[in-house]
Length: 209
Image 1 (cartoon, rainbow, N blue to C red):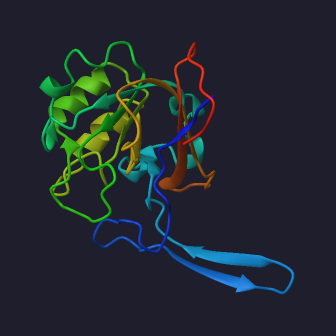
Image 2: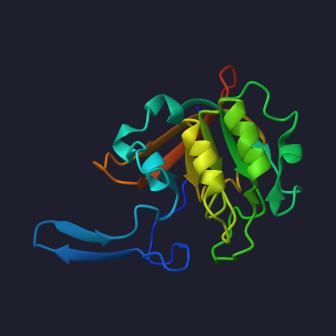
């Protein structure tokens, strides 16, 4: 079976939002083994937002239901949708999918652009009403850089998990199985994650990407 790793590598050059901590790594040679000290934000690289990131009484990352993050998902190619993904952009495309990953023109980019593609409030409200379990995007954030958090709150209040800064550049639109696992960081607001896709059942593949 083939697997698609849609996680961005974490390194000192990892793209971060302005003001966020740039990842740093200090590796120490202790003779017969190596050990490294890491410093980074809970929202570094490909990451999952916990509800408490925007909701005062929301779940922390170790409380996010795993069923939101594991199961069938649909990748939507929205590279022609422009910088603002609206309700109209998504209409008729979600089907019965419980998990959606949005591929935009940002996949593969390594520099920050404050005008990155994102969803607007109309799209967030539609997704919340449809009881989507998880929404992911390849941009630095699900909503505009100049925002008030309304998109995050709308999604998180509905029980929808949010994955940001994916790399979907090598993945075509279609249906997949998804495993997206955050670190079990007790009481925190988010975590870097490893996100892996596999093709729908019934198709046979022989290597991983």
